[in-house]
Length: 253
Length: 223
Image (cartoon, rainbow over all chains, first blue to last red; front, top):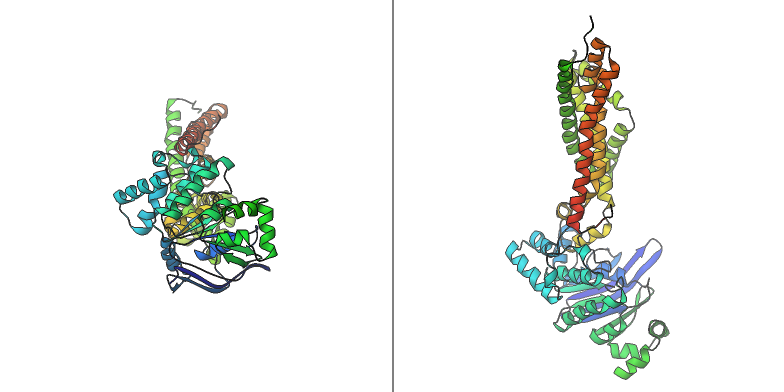
């Protein structure tokens, strides 16, 4: 049974159709990368999964149970589904440690000692143990994003969502965040990423989803999608974002 | 016969300063409680609560505080059908007046916190109350310090209006002393200096507090 199943999701903002009949499943341990032009509905899809947006129609099943949009149900859902944003969204008034221990303590009732232990563990995962007492503004963008990942991991989610988490970073800082993602993927974390990092998507994702005009336009393993796109839209997209992408992909594949 | 301004008159002013400070304190604490509730209600999703609080704020911000004083003073007198003490009227009027302004200041501070902070904390499974308590209000508080202290200074000076309904605070005491000494150019500068002696340290305190919080946040400002 897939851990998450989306069935016929539609979402409109006014007259703009953001998502049109989107269906998608993800198995435990799977890594899905969602690619596509801006405005193709990638972020909206991610936000529908953890209830930041409520679909107009369609069904979302998490763990086989339909997702409800009451406050209590959403809080329960978000204990299991973590999300990391493009703009980090750390709590600027709290230390790194408190950023990480806050939610486990107040939302899951974890004791202070356990929460602190968890904070050290997740900071080790993102290789930032030495920044435990820093405040967010003292950190670089890449470090802040790694703390944001650690903060989300401390809730011990079963599914992680990443919304273009390297897009706001200076180019030289992208690598350190990608490294963390790759480590998570190899450790078996179930992840859905919206990303423009094609190199990473190709290397780490089990499945690539290409979205276009609010629909899942094409879907498949990276070797297939990057080397043999079946639609003109995907071929154009790959050419636009990666002028030499298909050549390189051919070499790899 | 004329008295001239001396030590006993100065002590009389100091004694009256007590009532200025006490009235300011009551209005600030009472208004703070009212304002806190107003600020929270104004930022909720409930339309009814928002409209009610907007109405309250508009009413008290859109009318002169002197009218409010008159209405509470004579209103209480009519209600109890007797001459009333000025205290309850001024305390109530200034509390509600301060509540409207503090509510509006704090609403602005809450709404100045980026939506993404609400989202990030919601996505970590925090409840609405937990979001306010741990994420939003601590940040809003930092933002609200300068305008809050600014308003407090206005409030301290504004209590002088209570002199008009005969409440003996610093300004009223000054008038009374002038009436017996006929030395307005000695008495009023001293009254003004006393107000200044209260308000200036408040402004300094505000700046110290801001700087300390900035240091905690790791913000370096060029002064």
